[in-house]
Length: 317
Image (cartoon, rainbow, N blue to C red; front, side, top):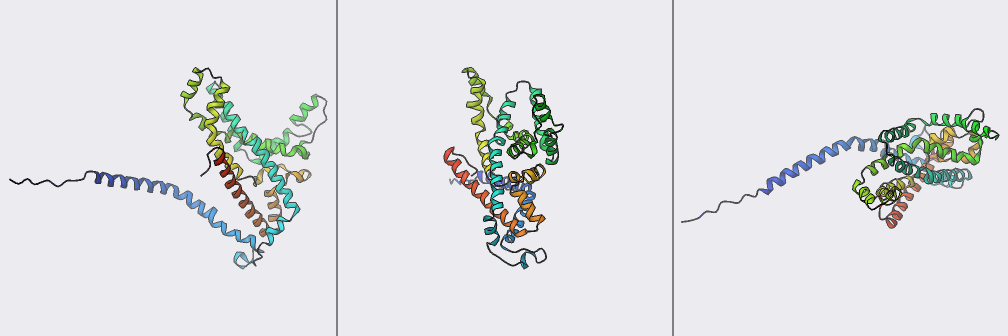
């Protein structure tokens, strides 16, 4: 009597094939969702990078990029040896340094303080109100600050008048202007910038706070040992991104708040580029400035990322 062995069928292979098909469909769907964003980046970010070649030419709109003569490093050398450029570079770095010290820390402090509110309704209202200034244009924000700081009927000067102090022309005082600009930026964006910190705090395990209460930790101790450590990864990420923009300041904020009297301390790279690029039509020079500005920002990001990885073991990559 012969016994015939039945052929073995591997039941795992069909399951593996099914998983692979599902995986491929999922990945394809994700790439399909990502495609419009990639297309926008390609069209509006990468293709225009070809225009960097203008910085090495004496560009003429009538000749175009291909017809304009090449001049090499002429424009880069010109603005690096120009006293006015170094003045606006200094103003840019000083204002950005103030923004980094005060503007970057303000959302962190605000998120922690708002999280400590015990009344849920009041907490939500506070957060909502803090978001609103972000949606105002800088034209409106500048108008509000000009009105509040007006020497004639401004709120601050009215309060100073109660103590017999003469009106102060805040917006024309060079010593005060940078502080006013930074304060306006904090008022406008502190609530919006704190959204990410609210999300991080909400994701911290509540059992950690409960264990800390059992051990007798005060609210200050809980913030120091639980809330802040939980926020560190997000703080590091946003700090690195902020450092990469140390050589840039939004044009609209400075343009609408500055005036000729405080131009020495308020003229930054963005307003300088606008003035000599659009008003004086020096396209090659302004493109060269933007090119070097981007390189400096990139080097700052790489350096800050390496330092962060060595000090705290975290970075962008």
